[in-house]
Image (tube, rainbow, N blue to C red):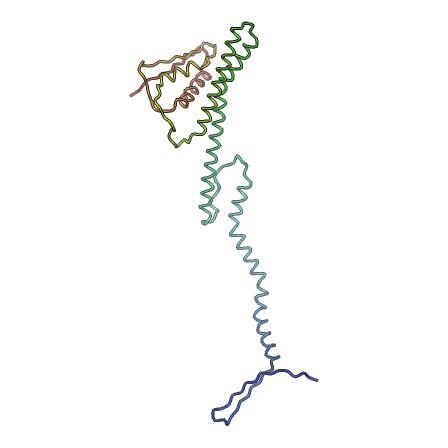
Length: 257
């Protein structure tokens, strides 16, 4: 036996009551027609989805390729390579980021250069007092005279004090901001400062000598005495290192113009 199927009926009656129109449709057939329409609508979307996803993936990967190249460039660099990043292939939206990174790399390179110069300056500044300490320690070790041993020990203490003072000056120099003003500038007589540096300079016994010429009048400038001592000491050390024997080195402290 056939099961009874539900139907949907539509009745229309004329205003005079003489005519009646009745339309019926099986609900099963109606649902089947709705499924066919839905299937015909969804099937193309389902079939095109993999292609659309593939195109979307390719477009995203192509758009992000400059960023991937930039990331690969950064990842492949050694710690010593602080050259600017190439920004031509980067999208315009990323250009400000690349420019900021390049500015950061420039500051890092400048900081590393300053640290290397500081290390070289520290070694240069400490070489002389440590050499004095070593020589006087050898004298104290080899001499049999008590006065000579006492004098050598005093020189060792003086050399140690000078090395400590040099280290403090270098640490202070390392903390200075090159764009900032001196924290506590004071009046300095350059002639007195030059004499103090010359008296503390160790002159090799190969005929070289250092003399100071001044005008006899105070030559006062505003600055930092410790930093100026470092500058003058470096100049004298370089003069002693790179001049031949029996050279007369003259330091002038005078005002020009």
